Length: 478
Image (tube, rainbow, N blue to C red):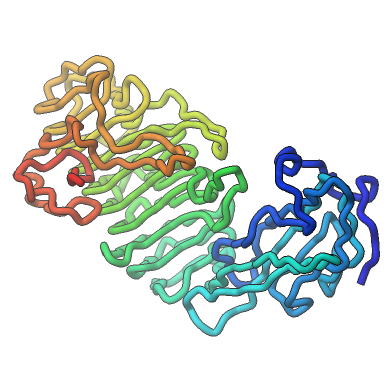
């Protein structure tokens, strides 16, 4: 137990008077800046980020807190720090807050392993007592068991089931002779700079009801006026690297987001060619690239590949086929993500002499973004490039007069394509690539191709109105 008076000279963290305290009505009791301090889901044994709460003295004279305590004491999963001071019993006495001033309480939580797989609610409270009475701040967090895979190399075929989420610390490596299979519903949480490195084969086959997810391990939020989930900030983890020159990779119903690179699919062996199938996937918000394919064949169906600091899709060597895909880049800086996209187009075809022969097929898709030109072809003989673009929308300042663009809708400055192409959390807006009601994507797709993929990425029937839309999403009226 500690008896002390807090003054500005003793603060480890400098406490300043807050403007809103001056405007608040007089109250004889100190008040908390929030009634309840809630943590996002916390993995067991890992520990949370530090949260903070202000305790205000809104009176024009000093107030003394006789006792400030964590109700659960030393047995609580929560820990408190009062303006830089700690106590193993989480009990503090005789704290003075000057007139119109405030002090901080810092809170952390570490959750012990639980007996159940589902998240468990944990609660405690901070209680302050003065001569005028008591006031309570509720603390709550959800604890989630998980399996930790720490710098692990898989040398044999391995199936990861969906019982508990997996926390990846360091790289998860798949050896050249091994296949990693991910069951429907698997959740992979990657620590900062952690990667999935596949030198063998990757078979990640989720379902519409039980998709597979790959994301960063920060479950908390950045404490702005409108809190921003870390999962919306690019660069939270590394990426998925498919590096086997003979690899056979399949991803179905997989969501990958907010790392440095989404899928980096590269073959450096000129004697073989790998294959990659991507179906019903979302690859969103990466600091560098979403999808890179070099010297390998690839088919992408009914998928949304969106927002990147560099190329959203980069193709170099191999045959690459896209059906009903939304490829869009509206990546921009924000309060939480102070990086702008570079000048790279959303869709880049790079035909180099030292690469495998290239072929690009795009049907019923959209290539768009915030730049003037979102499609580019770099080839010594562009008119001889093997490609086929049909029933698709392409954002460019000027149309490309090449023979392989057929039934293509070139962009206009007046076009409104999507429901939302910005992040404005105070207005509850986040990127939504469903076509707008007046979008030129509506009815643009070829119905015969759409019949092969009758459901959009959200499971909606794109044939219901007889005029399927281009892209991964079908417009549905309110």
